[in-house]
View 1 (cartoon, rainbow, N blue to C red):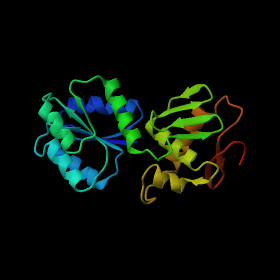
View 2: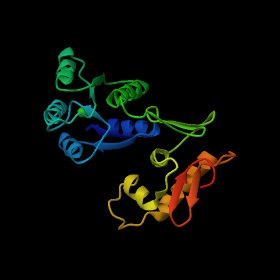
View 3: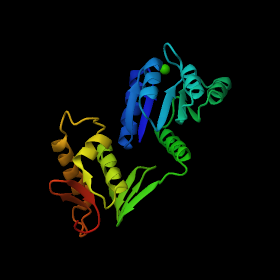
View 4: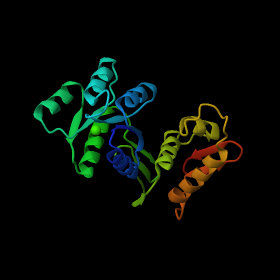
Length: 227
Ligand code: CA
């Protein structure tokens, strides 16, 4: 789950990034409206957290332009301005929700979850294999009654394996789809293997039914029992 944070105050941006990453979101920060606008056009995000008071192009201007161009990504506005007209202007410009600064972080997280849920009504929200369960909204992973703490990359990797349940996944597929390396100019094999090893430790250690298997010379498969 990728979130773009458009915020010019470095301290606020750093706090947002840290807090959201702790909740396992992948976070990209833009310090200016121009950069934010450029990134939204060049990359894919699941949600945008947009500060209204930005130097240069302000949040409202960016938001209206994005909506005019048909960009439907959910937008949560952050604003220090508590005036009713600012909030109304934000919502009228196409924001899905807003939060007035200063705000409590748990509230921000709850609103983000609600927006993401609303944004993908027909999509699968939970993935499951044996007693391993992944909730794509709360980003919680459990094996039986045990909760598993994953880094953002490990989460994406496990999500990919779960989406390809019982299918062979090659290192090329992981490099392209999880690491987003368009070509294999820089082989990621070692990096991928290290991440798989860590993930396997978290998922399969001390459990009778192993789920993550290596298929020698080919790649990996997530399935119950030996491949
Ligand atoms: Ca600002």
